[in-house]
Length: 213
Ligand code: PRP
Image (cartoon, rainbow, N blue to C red; front, side, top):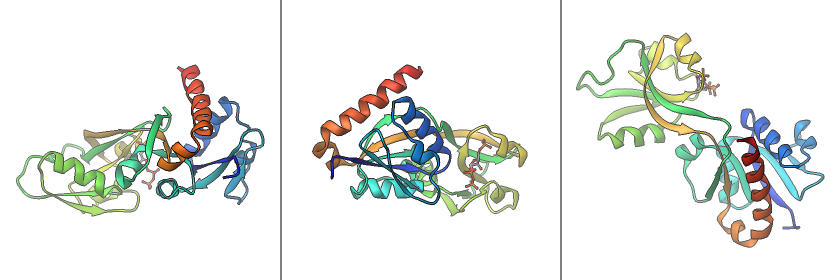
């Protein structure tokens, strides 16, 4: 490493919030604000290079040590797992995983094996295993709300933020599965090798988080 840390940021919703947080901590993020098609950006006033990636790839890059740090949602961490340190709850990207069903339907009211659709099969499996309940899980890639509407599944496990998507599609949440927010993760070797650099970065971020409360 040439004295610079590398951080992977989840593209999209978490990207903007991460940039706001870093700017609050005094880091000039102008290159990340107007990225064009570039995927790596050197910050001009702090020894940090920012990589923009999809959420599961953030974990892959941090696990492999090609990025020292990452910002990723707890939803992806719960689904993908992996070996890294989860050091800070960044407080944004707050939502929850919930079990939802067609409004008024009785999910638990029969002994028949339930079918549950989700983009997050591992989270779903762990949730029902925790209840000692056998369910059939159907992996869906997006717009999971369609599954109960089309009678493909009895319920879904999905991200709920405002609840508007469920409501507009005649579904309702019946149980919380897990709370979700953006997390800062660190590669385990980097934590030892670049302790001073990482401590400096974490201290700046923690100060900014404290200033926000
Ligand atoms: C997520 C989630 C819900 C919606 C929840 O979808 O899967 O569909 O947001 O938000 P709400 O409670 O505020 O309505 P996303 O936009 O990530 O799209 P996708 O499911 O099609 O991937």
